[in-house]
Length: 447
Image 1 (spheres, one colour):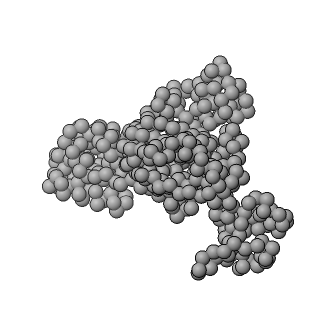
Image 2 (tube, one colour):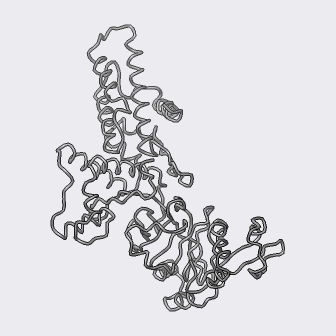
């Protein structure tokens, strides 16, 4: 067991003056209750075998039926009590903050560990069955997904296959719940989703329960949630979705990172400061091939120095000198062909990722929308700007539209910052109790 678990064990017994919790001179019913709690691991997407449920149950039975006068009986009972406590606390920690850790550098587990020792002590003196509810993730989404998992296990036990849709309306619902464009017709993508084994869907739910254990308890009463594999941005207030906007996310090799930060600024008619990686891999080669590429795409070159930056003529650039190119900055001027569209939304972060408009509107009609270099493109930028600036009377729809089309960059600070959470959930339950699945676009479920 981990050192953190043994620390919890010591705290548990210190709080109760070293008095046993589950046994006295014989194993008590509370010991059996503890086994029942451990056996509920499957309901949280975990494995009861990882918590020695059979071995503990056998040990309880052996001591209950064994020689009450054995000279080492007191020691055996004490060891059993500690073993039950340690296993419960290990299980509680796994339910609370995860059995595993994120496998992507940008992805951090950010839930604070609850007071496992104190909560278990309180439960030991009352209803132990309620203990997990006090330590599991606080978000309703976690419990809804847990209930969905229980339903899937029930279907598996009964040998009931995933219900196949028959009518056009049923097909549309199925498609909507499986990340497929809702047409009402059973196409190849729909047939593939229908053929996914129930065991695979169970594992998909288990993976996403684990992800909720990495989420912080406080997302903010008002926040933005970008779910990468769903390709949607949702504005949420007090747990309710008030705005749902389609987005484009990073493609393979340019995956959108998973992190949280604070939305601070809306930038109208933005410049696009082209990242060095794109300059090296795309912009510079395109200019070498076509000397009018920069002019045609409204891109200017700035030479950086300690005194600032000055615009230079592309014809003076030695495109074969990588060191010289590294001293240059490339940016696309505001305008209708700007890669960021007419507005961008900044939540400063180490990944240099932000939300923005795009001139490539046709991509929003695609079912899978992983096409960007990592930033998140927003289908309804005007609506998002209105939502973010709603507390500033200077910014109504008319003024927003005007600022988006002036061609002059303008930064507007929000009166109150808004948390932004970029997340990765491939299974979730909607408000109507419908269980949704999406394709694992970055292959993170498998990892």
